[in-house]
Length: 374
Image 1 (cartoon, rainbow, N blue to C red):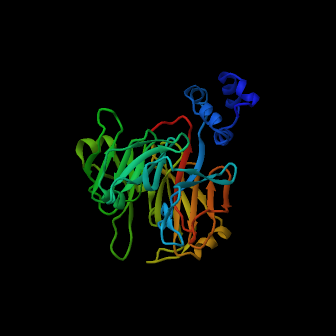
Image 2 (cartoon, helix red, strand yellow):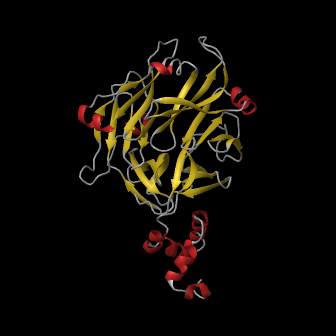
Image 3 (cartoon, helix red, strand yellow):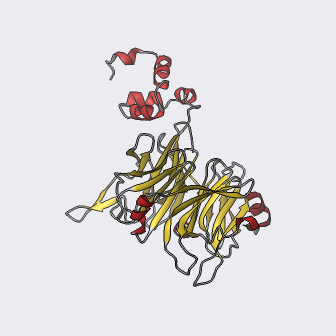
């Protein structure tokens, strides 16, 4: 590379040349050689491309059986570089980001927001398991370890992150909140006081939203609860059940509902099976996506899975829903592919899902940015 003519060009000229490339191509160029990597990660170049929109990607969570080591034929453990699989819906392409820059064993990505991925990692210095929650940007290979938590939180808590990277770890009984400010570089603990275990909680628009089953042991009855972050920090116990008479039987027609963040900070998605009857354990006719406007508190139908696509999920005993914003993804056991709903382009299949033998995978939206620092 030292004898290449491109090496004779001044950095400013090279920055202007590379800044004309799409972000996808810039990421590829960074892996060509050390010279390009240093050039395209310099502070000057980062400032030039700071106004670029992020890449809207899908990141897959590692399967439960995934580990960062495997056993070779002689019985010794062989280390494998940790990584995370991502999907680019615009290019219909799978690739992966290495996580080998993290000084942790078996990193487990669980959430993302504003260009950062949040993951649980085991300290490599301790013999016993000691989980830490880490924020990192795999594009810049930078990371930040959040204040220490007990391992029980990683086993039982759901990690939530909003658009300004405020973090919450939520369980049925308690919640931990981290604002990330220099003044309060610590976790604050509050009582959850929810009527049941929160299902698919979402942190957005300075509030937490969660579904809770308030029904009987033999019949589910789902309700939508919310809590403003300001109320949580002041009163500790201010969950409110969101309901309107106009909603009617909105929660009765959906089987096993899940929440996802909608587009922007004023839309909330609820996804589940559309019940064919109101019997005790009804079959579903398809999968329905409903959208709630948080300002007007009005529901509307956003999407309905085509019947020919739903047949594949109908035969599976279990399926997962993940994503958010303009796109929702669905996986099911023994499916071997994902279904995707795009609010602008409709429904389609995604083939080539890596690393999941049973086809049942989970994931989250990753808005990749070169400019986001932990």
